[in-house]
Structures are given as structure tokens and as C-alpha cells.
Amino acid sequence: MLEDIKNELIVSCQALPEEPLHSSFVMSKMALAAKQGGAQGIRANSKEDIIAIANEVDLPVIGIVKRDYPDSEVFITATFKEVDELLESECDMIAMDATSRPRPDNVKLNDLVHYVKEKDSSIELMADIATLEDATQAEKSGFDCISTTLHGYTEETKGHKLYNNDFQFLQDVLKKVNIPVIAEGNVMTPDMYQRCMELGAYASVVGGAITRPQEITKRFVQQKL
Image (cartoon, rainbow, N blue to C red; front, side, top):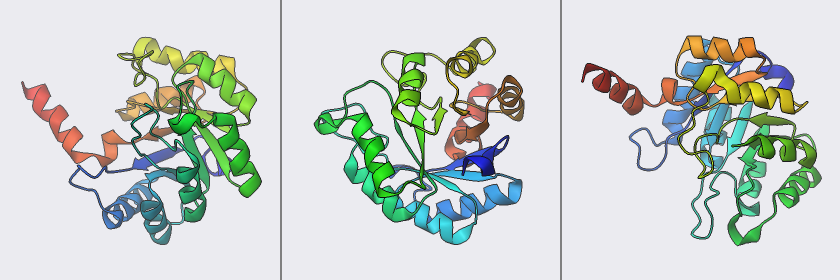
């Protein structure tokens, strides 16, 4: 998959149960719209959405499963259960939380990585990271690429934004590791996307700015105020 998305836009097509567009059918059409707009990859949440999207478009799919657990803050592909669902979906790449935070049932990140490689070595792995230390550890653990997805969303990085100081965090990660780095997280405009690419991002994932109309509407309303 990495060869297919180099220097390209990946669109995140996700809607959680409480959101108005929550529907595998709707997400498949969102992916079709993204493809027609020129996206070269899709990031999707849940086995059902991934299968629906794969039936609608021929773009490579990065799969995740978001699920809350009472004993952990990790919710992106947190355990073997989520990994198994993604393997069944036949997505092209699996993304998982690769922060240092404890996982549900004390599952170890390295064990999940080895599990995927043993089950299907053709599936690539994306590490969703929040810190430079996460990035370094993810490379050592055998991930194929790194995404800045969780920077600003963990307790340690809360309030940080990927775009702060001319995407300084992205620049730091690019210097720290040798595997592809994908920019993700609050990439809200075409200019921001272009800047990520100029700085050396392998690709960029854009979600809310394209596929979450309630968030887009809210920005317009807040701008008026």
C-alpha cells in the first residue's frame, strides 16, 4: 500500500455512532466522493465500513477499529479482538495506537505487531503516535510507517496542534525515524496539506475538513461569531 500513497492524499471516512452520517453505506459513498476528488487512499473505522468501502472503490484502505475500554485510554485498535476484525476485513494496512499508554487487559504493543505479521505478512502496519519517543519505539517494533494522529490528544500532549510552529512536531519526527511519516491531525486546508508535503511527509491523511459536515458547519458558524 505504501507505494500507492506516496506523495498523495488519504481521506479519512469515519462517523461514530453518535454522528449523523454513521452508516457503512454512507461511508462507502463518502469514499467514492473522495476518490472522484483525487484521493489515493482511504482510512476507515470498523470491519463493516471497510468492507462496504472496498466494494465501492478500488483504493487501498487503512483500517482501524475504535472501541472504548474501561481500563485504558487506548481506543484505536487496542487489542487482539480489533486486530482480528481488521484481518477479516482484508484491509491493506492496519493502524493502531502506538503510544506508551497501557492497553486494555495489559496487552503489549509488540505482541500485536508480531501477531499481525504472523497472520498475514502482506498487511502493512501504521503506528499512530503522539510523541517522538512513540515514533522511535514504533520503528524499533517493526511498524512500516508512522502517523502523527494522536499528537495533541493524549494527556502528555493535550493542547498541542500538529500545525504549531510550522508543523514543528512533524519536522521533528521526520528527523527522528527512517520509515515513512504520514501527516495526520488537524490538517484543515489545502495550504496546510501542501506544507506537510513540502516538509517531507510521505503522505497526508485529512478527515474532518472533508468528511465531517457538522464540524465544517461549526467552523463557519464560529467564524461568524
